[in-house]
Length: 518
Image 1 (cartoon, one colour):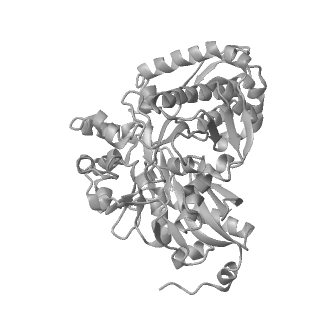
Image 2: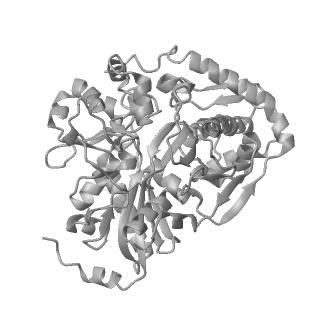
Image 3: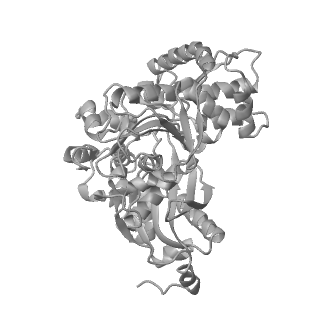
């Protein structure tokens, strides 16, 4: 039985109504309060580490996720103690796998996240009996297969049999936190569509994929709509968060789909560039955008009947951070970027291919690695910063060209969003390299949070549908490409393409993952 709300909770009911949006990203938790008109009231952020116990392994702690959510939410309520939180929705990074025992407790406290490629051998085993192109066309799972939970489950069965035998349920980060908050196991269609088990055409798990992963159907929560209520906030979680018990918690969405919704992806053909730790060119469409050579990855959209299709650059913000940490010579990251952006477009800079953390199948897969080429004794810190910014832009240009070729109804305008969209100089480099105007709006890096807020507002019945999520997008700046810059980039684009193709062709040659992989 839930405890009676405390006096402070009763006072909150008299304040202005808002929804709590929690966005679990790769680098940390971003939480924010949004009013009923889609206005951002306040935000908070707490990071958490990713550990790398072996080459190709990328793990996070479930306790770190929970701690970050608690810290962020308490900070918000300290900023706005007058606000009455009417509902909660989460977006979360995908492709991870959390094993839960029969009591709903994590079997292991650390867990592989989306970029963890330990299950490469298991993917080889699966595709000895299952046609890989057929699996891709039915699931839309266009990342390197080893990243998907289907193959990670097989890895656990082989390498951690005791943990696997204890696992009653398999979930991801968002759904585990919803369980902690409500006591209810659930997932949504967008999150399930990144599992490797989910068939886009039927909107359900496929028996042959479950068998390939060695997973029973009852080990996976049945998918629900993102705006379906999972349950009410339990007293213990409410006390930790500083919220009122009984607050509705909605199913939420995978971060890709929440960001698409929060980036004006409410109708057919909308394109946006997500610029963050990883970056992508993404289209919202009423059909999955699929191609067995280019392999865009696809998720079910928050909006029933739509799909989110994209091509990614895995290491974009993380590559810039890597360059800055090693070559920034005491500069802050903004100053590092400022120096690179201040160089003229026709200056001579090295060529940087940003596959430091692996790439898409077209780029050579999870074992491909990046390169910084064409170095000269005359190059300084600014040239290296510029090379990083341009390399990421060239990579995303390739993604945009491919998405446009495959999505017949794609609109001309491209919105930029995410934390990487905050730097004016880099945005201009993006526009010059992709050769078309890019639009930045007031939502900026809060797109995934807006998507989560929209889920709660629709779930509560405050918004009639998801099209209202377009309302907060007031244009702040349009970056128009410079014809002079376009001419200057032609030679560097050619060098980038040649290097990227060479790296893809020789992926695995330098064998960065096999020496100590268990």
